[in-house]
Image (cartoon, rainbow, N blue to C red; front, side, top):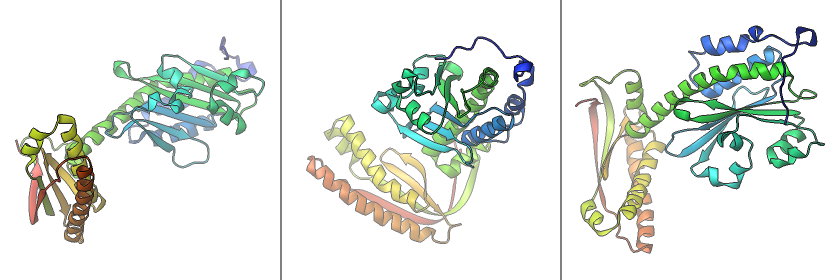
Length: 335
């Protein structure tokens, strides 16, 4: 571990805190039009390099609220136009991969992880990432917590290939950015979370209308569309026969079988209604009607495969009905 004990003087090539303003001012005052966190990380790192800070790699490790993923990592390296984004499944924090990453120390409460990547340093072997970075010419690595409201903690990391690692003024430059980066990242993460939750429960078109301000009672939109309504038969009797967890598993399989073809064909699930669903295929797409019929056929095949699996476990086959219509439909906040 490296201990930082003092700021450098100008004579030694350092800069005073008041001079560490370029990227900080940009983060605070000039990022309002940047919607996505991965793009913000790319531009921040490019600006750091432009300011003479020897960043050669940076990553953000985020705990996100998403129906499918528990976390994500955004990785920047020089020469890329877009950051690389990896997502991680739920329960990843119990895996060997997660436990053997330095970011885990930050999640567990550490205020800093700093490692000089020198082959003579025995600490390097404690994480596979350190050995990997060293093999690619990196000389120094640092990770810090990004503190969001309500105690939520994320992680930012920086690494350099500069001989002898980051200088003291570079470390302090990067530390100065942390509060602003926390604010900028939290805003974008919450915007993304709101968008994801709305898309999950009301669909992408309706969610876009809501985010644009269509929230007043009676607000709605008329859409010309091919419409599909689907309902599971005898669901009440099925619920009486099987335990709750089995019913949830059956419903998940039923909705997956029908919804995946709808979304793959350009349809939008507007509403789930217990054991039913409502989907539309906007007629702005000239193939909307054909896409709807193909989605129904693919769903029928998938339900057939699901029924085969249910039969193997002693459960009854699912029966369902589908209704279709072509015309104008109005949807919105009608209550």
